Length: 215
Image (tube, rainbow, N blue to C red; front, side, top):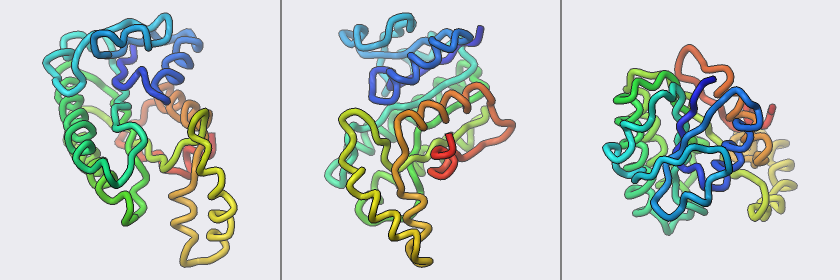
């Protein structure tokens, strides 16, 4: 049975991914949480108390995991959260890369974001691009998961934009933006992540919006 190590396991995507992996029956899962948040992890997940912004606090507890899934990020990203992106998203992925390399991780899964150019969320995209660059220099293989907005419980408002995306796809100048900034569902995200974990790629691989939507 393989072990998967997860950061951000108490979040919107993390809790659902942990449940899916445990239900599958061929993985054990351990996840890092801050002290006091242990109860937020799904039952059956091994709890590692530590600080996701400090590799030393958890790197010795990653093994025997060979797969590392990094889901840490500022909740509900917005242009007003530029400093949080730097202080949380950027720092956490740098520390995760160090911890994963230290533990001899073979496959790293990074929740990034669509890299289709935007003005309103360029700071968020820049930090995630820096995270991808850091991971690309590591001794392990990385899967870059690049959604734009994940629809699900408590995250339904972008449904209102679906008709707009449909119209944009009819115009050549807008088609690429409509494709790569389209929404995906939480179910598609979890299926993509599980498949990515089940079938580790031989080289660094990008899961963009169209690929995620195929699940």
